[in-house]
Amino acid sequence: MKYMLLVYGAEEGWTEEERHQCMLDSMAICEELDQQGKWIASSPLHPVTTATSVRVRNGNRQVTDGPFAETTEQLGGYYIIDVENLDEAIEIAGRIPPAKIGTVEIRPLCPLPEVETQQ
Image (cartoon, rainbow, N blue to C red; front, side, top):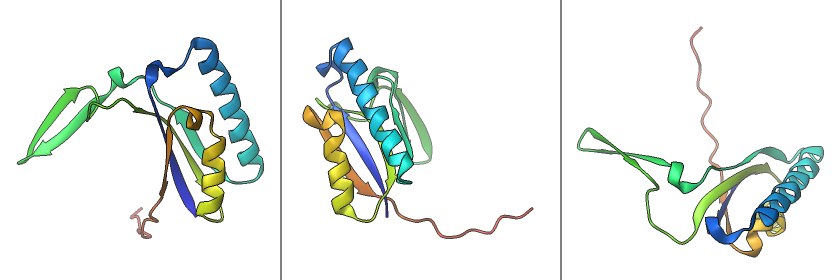
């Protein structure tokens, strides 16, 4: 089963040393999962101040700078994993360093239907 682990936290919650160590620890988890055939992708995100939000209302596109909502925790990164079940996803999410000061949301990915492409 494929899951997306969404990593939320306060952007100012890390010192530069803590952020660097978090990256090293996170990369080690990715390498381990990759060796087990369970890692698909992951990446930290740039700060929420770099976000652009797009909404379409009544056929009109609205583009605004910044995030969709004002919150104390922002989406800071993600992992996409392929594991046996939710219990395994929970175990992995608990090992991700930002889980210690933020939140890791686990969401199953919906498989897309097969689509024929015309060549």
